[in-house]
Length: 219
Image 1 (cartoon, one colour):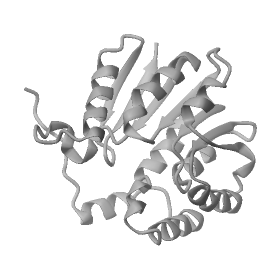
Image 2 (spheres, rainbow, N blue to C red; image 1 turned 135 degrees about the vertical axis):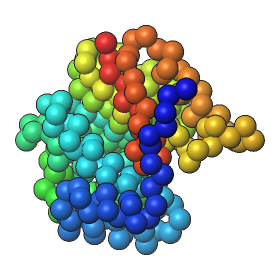
Image 3 (cartoon, rainbow, N blue to C red; image 1 turned 120 degrees about the horizontal axis):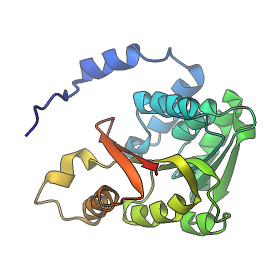
């Protein structure tokens, strides 16, 4: 077995990491505060370092067409949209008018609302209504876990060669390696992780960013 080099992040080490990332952003800070006011459900918001990573990836790829499955209050979408060029477009899929109302407000404040199209409804229906040709550069999945494989399978044919599928929560707070964890979400995450690892259509890497982030690049 190879040597383990990953660090467990203490609160102090995480604060240090964030402090040495992009400078504080008033719009994102406002979005974090408003999301925290929702209560425990705020845990669904992506971490600041993950948001910065999404922006960097979009810019490095030169992505112009992106899709997000699971928008919540809009933090990750804002970060993705900031990485897109002015003529870039991000399609966001969610089922909550309440949560995405918070998103819309902050997208406007950040000046990225013109790049974002939000569709409220079941994401699989939205994806299946898209053109079937490979026109997408990047997709980010962060929604209901039992549908992860279905989302992935709808997105991959629509992704250009060299495009990326990014998938959040693939470590599921460590539950993926807990033999006692047999709940529906953990089982679904394990199924998805096995599915991608065996998929020869992509090359993939799983990173310990936040709750685990998989990058799958279409061959």
